[in-house]
Length: 178
Image (cartoon, rainbow, N blue to C red; front, side, top):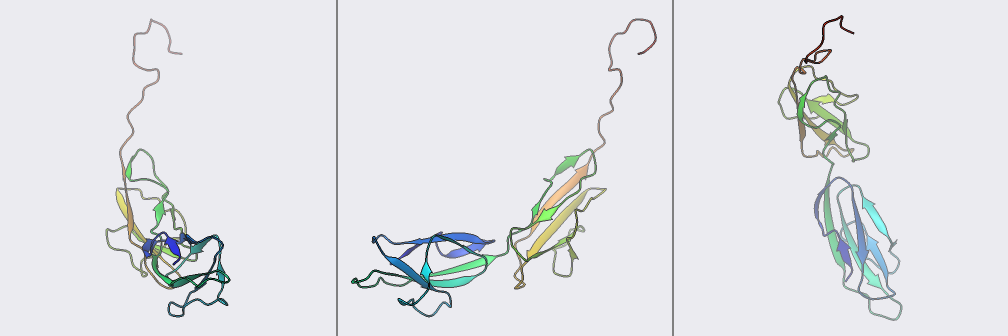
């Protein structure tokens, strides 16, 4: 039976997967509806494929003059990729513009800045957000099928930068400052 990698399961964001067989010279064919077994007329699988959404795939290896392999079924549950922030959590001495992005194509990011869990009723992300006081930004990705990612968050706070002096402190001779 063909082997799949990564193994079936739940993954965040689109995944790349491959299918192989220990038998040489085989052609691997597949179906995507989750119920029909592949036949010699099914599409041929080759290389690495990106799976953008949840699916149950079925694979079978064929070689002319040989008995076909057993069917391998692989169910992948794909959640949208959680949003990534362009600024890390931390304390800064100047205002930060926090960008957000998701690896999930055709998706929308929603965010909150009041500590609440974001939903599709929250503010949609369209441009970097620049908090002026200590703020925790929470965000989710929602894909075209309305599936929701796990939540991401970043906490930004600010501190006044240390005072600097010009010239720096030290011993100076009499005379005007230059």
